[in-house]
Image 1 (tube, helix red, strand yellow):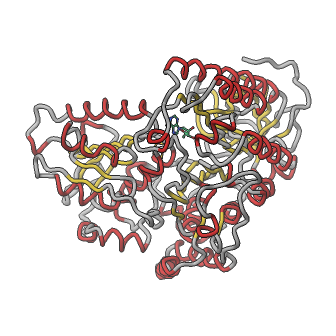
Image 2 (image 1 turned 60 degrees about the vertical axis):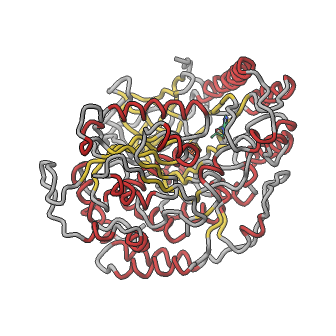
Image 3 (image 1 turned 180 degrees about the horizontal axis):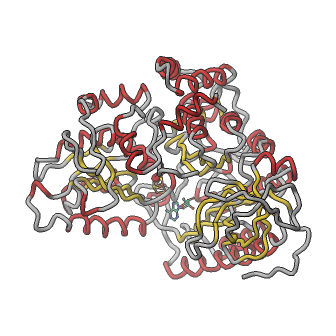
Length: 609
Ligand code: 5AD
Ligand code: SF4
């Protein structure tokens, strides 16, 4: 934890309303030092350095003429975090975000290419955005930009044939956005594009612009993917794997802790293949320039990061989980680097009251040392995403996943043995090339045998350029894909319903997220195992002392960002219902029970809703 002085400084700097937050962000140097260089290199410095005349309190445009940008984001959490990074770049270059598309000078759509359906939706939105310019003078039509994963794939179509976009920017080109926009503003009919993929870009030095007052945050730790699973377009849309340096990750985590964030999700396309450089030249520059800002809490954070880095010199590659393989040479990439287990341990050590989650992992990168950190750190979530994709060894082979049904089962057994009660979630694709009825039955039986807490299940959607598209035949008819998908979903649901029932009578340490959408007299929150819990508001609770049979009474109010002990009294398919027992903290709950939840003592006659 930081010193009180640092905490106070950050609190004072933290704006309390969205407007104040927007102002503070726009010119307050939230880009760290290296970004400033990079932004300068991108030609943005002139705009940032220009004297601010101040934005009027009532929101009218300031004398520099700040522009309004509207951003719509599709796809995964990584895309959400990318949009936050993009906003940081744009705010530094004279833009403010608007939630009203009709007010926007610039409309940006951050896209996903993972399945055909995701793309279809985006084409519809683009046609709509274009129509907003109808009847307006050319100079007043909003600039429309397509960003992210669809950019590379469809750049010609977007700019030339359909003319639905003015600018196209790939996932590694966000620093260039102000330049791209400038190139088309006031240049009717102009087009600008940067879809260059980088082997280095991690946006390490940019502090994303996050939702004001949110208690959860995403922190991207690596980008790209080298796995080349046969179905997946990600390596083509997002490029090679690269890891963000440890110092900048630690800095951001500490900053979030100072800001009262209670849940951080570490992100990466293959998050647990993290391989950070121990202490690069960039790291040293980055830290020393932070220390230069002497009155800023950043300086203290930088010193603390240096202490932590002293022990982070990289280590030998410990290998993959037993029975798992990879097509690329792991030694070349990871020997001597800081690997995921060490990173996770360091991140978790920053603030014991901050829950750490991570996504999206590959099962191959769960060697025992990663499992040990998850087991031993109370604030690392006991919910692991283990994307199986299929339960058939033959299909897994065709998918080039690097494991068999048996090795996947063995890994799950190891997780369950080392981390009792750990929730497990998965991704499944039905109807991949060559999938037979027997292969499909293997997936159904996997769903029944493992009993996932959550599953994301999809029909295979062929993507251009992938190994699946180039070397295999998409030979499962659409109706068969859909029928198999439904059977997989049914198998998942049957076990998930049982698991929900088994929760009744248990007590969880729940992070309060906000009022329930359905009933404002209820709060919603999340358990350590990532389950949603709804419970009645009660502002007369006391401190939880371990008695699961009776709620405490006192004068503690409950608000979003608090941890409370909640006894589960009922459930539906996706939600637990409960009664709040008292106020608690991660550490206090752990001291009382040895974990962030207790198993049911009795069902208390409770029933499913
Ligand atoms: N078709 C269907 N689902 C896919 N996924 C990835 N590529 C495809 C595809 N071509 C799924 C995988 C992955 C999740 C993010 O999306 O299950 O884990
Ligand atoms: Fe979609 Fe994958 Fe890109 Fe995320 S990384 S936005 S899931 S294509």
